[in-house]
Image (cartoon, rainbow, N blue to C red; front, top):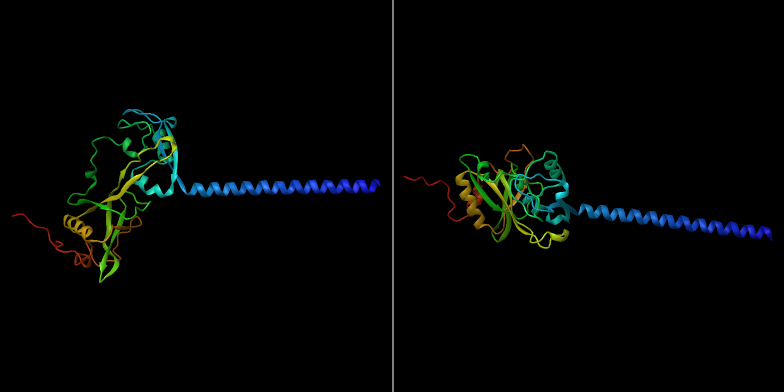
Length: 261
């Protein structure tokens, strides 16, 4: 009888241990699943920073002055175009005690413009003898920055079919972005964010006029191919400048610059 009791107790103990092991495995599996979901969600978002309080020109930034807002990654190109600052950017402004260059308001997006002196002319970045040409872009490459070089392509109708043609290669980007700020950034979320994806490129005067006419004749917005830093060779067109094949599709496209008598 005692033997049977001991056997039953041993069997019960084994069942308890087995139940605890199963429960532990379930907890661990749940933790792994939650961490995986958090990691996936983190990859699909990015952080921007807004001001908790207004700041006057000359004041310096501190971490308590800002809060981060996580946004869906689909908005990243727009906020890059707006000059939104990353955590590393904010940390550098604080570390080197860079002052605000203009008054900023509570809930305002923290951008590089707030630390840029008023009166600085963007036109000073254009090389002498060239022109800055704004272009509406189909999709802003997230990696695109001023001073990058790009190839520009555009869609056309050719013999009844849609084609994409190279317009010009190796063009210097002067500025990135013309952005309409979010309507509301209070409450830790963006209620509405709109904006045009625009860049400014640098071209010779004749090329600038030609490109403007190409834009009007095209069937859609320009597309960009970003070049690796230092790559300046022509690989799609035989010569520099606007593609002659594209100019043939543009009515009355100028081939020379008119000279005043």
